[in-house]
Length: 306
Image 1 (cartoon, rainbow, N blue to C red):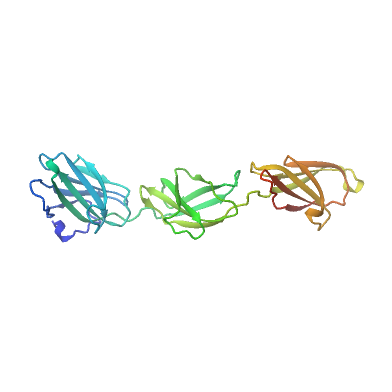
Image 2 (cartoon, helix red, strand yellow; image 1 turned 90 degrees about the horizontal axis):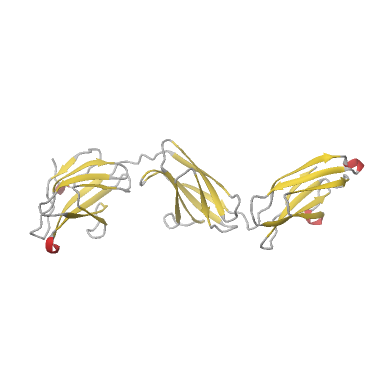
């Protein structure tokens, strides 16, 4: 058995007992003994200790190995068994167990260089990014291969931001929504899988350019309902899709082959389709654009030949 004075590196052994070798300038307040680290994982470690008679509570403080006592993360306990969670994989930690005695006296026991295990979250994470229904939201669809996953983490910011300084979101399902983004803006988006607590996959970076405030329609199509353009009896329907709520109307432009939409025969409708009868063959292409509630118009979508 080695003592903590030898700065024990604990990694693979799941049961380690430490003798008392830490010291304190305080006297009259006992410190714990027989500290045993009995379980570790990539993001947690568990230990127990023999309590001190007449001491009812203890302060646990931990941090990355070498941290200065008083600057770590602390919490009180009255139990002789403790689990510290949300740690980083493959990292050495120091732990102080401080006896809280009467009249403000304290005495501490230090565990040095306890190692968490390697990450088990070694699969591949990926995501698909879309903008549907709102120009201010990005829909994210996650995938993870190579193991099980508990949740997903997204960190995003303007292109070039430093990871760790962005906005972080956590999603408990395979899809989520980034809300409140700017239009016509380039974002960097980092996606991680979280397998358990703080055991996370490597981040995958995406660079995404958001759409404008008035997107153009998509999925243009046209169908001849009846008649013939050669006889001037053609009855034809024109349709498109627009998945956002900010369009007040749409303008369709019918042109001859190679014509510009701004110079075509234009018609406005509040629907996502329009039909014309008694059409001749002089028109054989169509465009459509959205007219949005903020007074702007989208780019022309098209042409579609018919």
